[in-house]
Structure formats: C-alpha cells, structure tokens
Amino acid sequence: MLKQSEAGFRRLLPLLRPHLRQLSLGLVCMLVYVGSFLLLLNLAGDLFPALGSKDLSRVLALIGQGVLIFAVQKLAQFGQDSLLAGPALQVSKTLRSDLFSRLQTVELGALEKLSAGDLTYRLTEDADRVSEVLYKSVHDTLPSVLQLIAVLGYMLWLDWKLTASILLLAPLIIWLISLFGAKVMAATERSQTKVSELAGLLGEAIEGLPLVRAFAAEPWLQGRFEDEIDQHRKARHRTYSLVALQHPVVGMIEVVGLFSVLGLAAWRIQSNDLSIAGLSSYLTGLVVLIDPIAHVTNNFNEFQQGQASLRRLRQIEREPQEASDPSPSIPIGRPQGHLQLQQVNFAYDNGKPVLHNIDLSIAAGQVVALVGPSGAGKSTLFSLLLRFNTAQSGEILLDGNNLSQVKARELRQQMALVPQRTTVFSGSIAEAIRFGRPASQSQLMEAARLANAHDFIMGLPKGYDTQLEERGTNVSGGQLQRIAIARAVLGNPAVLLLDEATSALDAEAEAAVQVGLRQAMQGRTVLVIAHRLATVQEADLIVVLDKGRISEQGSHDQLMTSNGRYRELCERQLIRMNAPTNV
Image 1: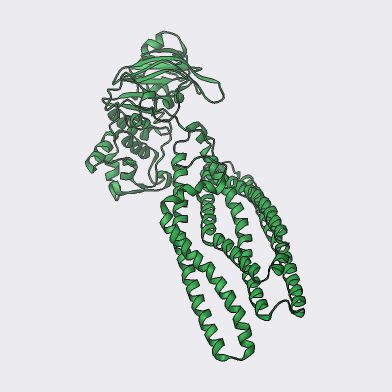
Image 2: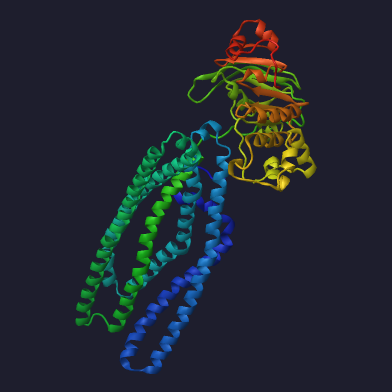
C-alpha cells in the first residue's frame, strides 16, 4: 500500500521496483538514443566542409553513415518508448487500485462527508493525469534532460567560450520555468477544485432532476450550473494564460542567446579562432538543443499539474480509516446469534455523546425492534454492531465474543443488512444477489424463495439473467427490496438487521416484502429499526431509545400499559393495544 509522504512523485518510485529489468532495458535504449545525437553532431562537422570541397564520394559516404546512425537512433527510440510505457502504466494502475482499496476502508462518517462527484473525478481524471506525467517523465523528460546534458557537454568540448556565453542565460531560464511552474500548479489546483465541484453538482442534479421539475426550479438549477462552469472556465483560462505567456518569454531569451552566439562566432571566425567545421558542429548542436528545451519546459508545466493531481489523490489517504483487525483475532465460526451490549457509550468526532450506557441482552432467534424519535441512536447502534464505528467504552458481545476481537470481514459475513434505501450495482439479478460471493444456482434460488422474490424473477424475460439498470430503475421498489432481502440471506447470516425495510413502499408492495421478511427472519436473530410502530407490534422485544438512552423495553402490550414514551409514540400514530400487525 501507498504511504503518506510529502515527497511528491518520489513516493511512486517503490512501485517501479517490480519492473527494474524492463526499466533497465529501456534505459539502455535511451542511452543509445541520446548517444546517437553526439555521433550526428560530429558527422555534421565533417559533412559541411565535404559539401564545400565538392568531393561527392565523401559526401555520399557521410550521408550513408548519417542514415545508418539515424536508423539506429529511431530503433532505440522505439525500444525506449515501448519498454518504459508498460511500467509507467502499471504504476498508474497500482496507484488507482491502492487508492480505491483505501477508499473502501475510510470511516463511514468521513466518507459520507465526501462528494461522490469529487471522488469520481480524483480517481479518474486526477489519476490519469498522474499516469500521463509519469509516462512522459520516463519516456520523454528523462531522455530530453540526458540529451541536454550530452549535447552541452559536447559543445563545451568543441568550444567552451561559446558555450559559457549560453550557460550565462541558463539560470535565468531555469528561474523563469520554476516561477511559471509554481504558478501553473497553483492555478491547476484551483481549476481541479472547480471541476470537482462541478462534478459534484452534476451528480446531485442528475439524481434530483425529478424533484427539480416538481418544484419548477429548472431556471435556478441552470443558473447555478452556468455559474459553476463559468468559474471553472475562469480557473482553466488562468492556467492556459500562464502557459501561453511562458512560451514567448522563455523563447525570447533563447533567441537572444542564439543571436549572441552567432555574433560571437562571427567575430571569432574573423579572428581565425574558430573553424567553419567547428562552427557547423556547434550550430547543429544549438539546433539540437531547441527540441529538448521545449520538451523539458512543456513537461515541467505538466509535471506541476500532475503534482496538483497527486496532492489531491493523497488527500484520500489522509481520511480517517476504520479500525484495523485485532491480532490475534477470535474466530467466530457460525454463531447462534446471542447479542449483549454492556455499558456501551459512543460519540462521534465532534464529541457529542450519541449513546449512553446501553445495556441490552438479545437471545438467539429473538426479534427485537428499536423504536424512538429521529436522532435517538438507532442507526448508530447498527453501525456499532457492524463495526463501522467503535464504542469509546463498554462491550458488544456475540455469543460471548467481544466484537472488537473479531475480524470485521468475518463479523459482517454473519450479519446482514437490509437498508431502507436499496442500492444495487448494474448487472444481472443473479449478480446483484450474489454480490461477489460464491453461490450455486440452487443456493441463489433458495435465497430468492426465502425473500419471496423467485416468482417475479422467473416471470422476467431472462429470469435471473435479467440485467438491472443503474440504481435498478427497471424493476419496482418492492421487487428491488426483495432482491435486497435475497442478497442478505444468501450467506445464511446469524443476525439480520432491518433498517425501515418497507417504509418507502405502497401497501401492495409492502405486503409482498413482508412475506419475504417473515420467511427470511426464521431461525435468525433480528433487529428492526422502525418508525411506523404498527409494523413491530409482534416483536419479541421492543426497545425504546430516547436521546441515546434506553428509556424502556418490553413487549407491545407491556409497554402500552406502562404509560411511558412508547405509548405516547403509539398514540400519535393512532395505535392501540392488540391492533392488527404486519410483522
């Protein structure tokens, strides 16, 4: 895994180690490619005098040598580019994979605060930019730098006085490139932030278009969108303007240097201090220098933009992570489902307590309903059972085993969640139920029967191979919820967690889902979060949470006779003792 570092692209170097052999071969090709320039420069020094001597055979011989050297150089360039592309792209793949893996372990509280559009942009566009910069660095920037060093060294050997006059301008050029590069990186970060905000708004807009139309709020949304894209345009234009300004400024300095060299060379030839052959090689060297300088300048700007992208990717690594698995851990196997909560206290990062001294014992196979007003701590209790969060004090036991001593993956294989809002990934219904777990077709169908989903699935044109569209929009809400129940019971969990599983359904769909729930609950410990109290009256135990505390617990009839908080909630919903029930 990647570790946090402020070293920029150097942090990616360890990812190149598995590819040292391929990199070494690519480096050999690179050295041949760069070395060919020196041979061509030397050849140019012989060719121009030969042209003046009218020695055709000598000219043809030198041209033949030049063609041969050029052919070798291009073969070396092909080898360099093809050999170095693989490791660079592999590093990009590893970087993206590691970051996505890390994203899956971010604390849910921190994850919920992140924009889906922003994260999508970072793991696609930002990761691609880092990949492009890394590829250019190894196959373009590095050979360009080597070419600059080699050609300047050759020019120093040819005529150190002329070369010294060029090098006097080098610090100014380097300073200007660095100055522009820093400004480009800052402008790029602003631009990327605006793109992320735009991506977040797009995600919200697409998700909420029906609501926007219902409120006739299209002009408001259009105005907000146009404001966002205008801010992005301005930020992007700033980056382009800086890059556009850099080229003429640096180019002007290069031209001044070139004409200064020509003037100095003319004076030295007139004083017989420099030969025509030497000048030919030297001027060829100057021409050869122009291309790598342009490449290094352009690539440095892209490198700075890549640094901005890498910095944004690194922010994912700084997000708080789920608690790591204990070592050693306690294997839980197939538990009976007996849950105990002993003096459990929990608060989120803001320090405000959410659960206070929760003491609760749930026998294996019991159906327990958690009721209470919003914010009472019901969903937080589920997150502690699934170990999405860890209690600050107290213990949660499953068959006597402390959940903090159990591997999270093993624990979650024994606890299944049916959420209020069903989330499915695009793919077949069979894939949605399996959800990455190995299961035979018979196991799949048995889970669907338990969830009262088999009949409607078989009634679809392709049965279990029917493709679900994004968010499952091609099936009804009740059908989607029964698929979620089948997904939950496929692994035969010991504990089933139901979070308002029927609250968003109409009466007919709810009735079909309730059949599936009753079948799925058989032989398991079940915890139900419910706001509609008519759905939980037959629960073995009803636990009333109020402001993070258990205010009362018992059966429906017991709690109705106690004149407590539960009775007050029931009367608000016009529920009396022994009313008809759904579960």
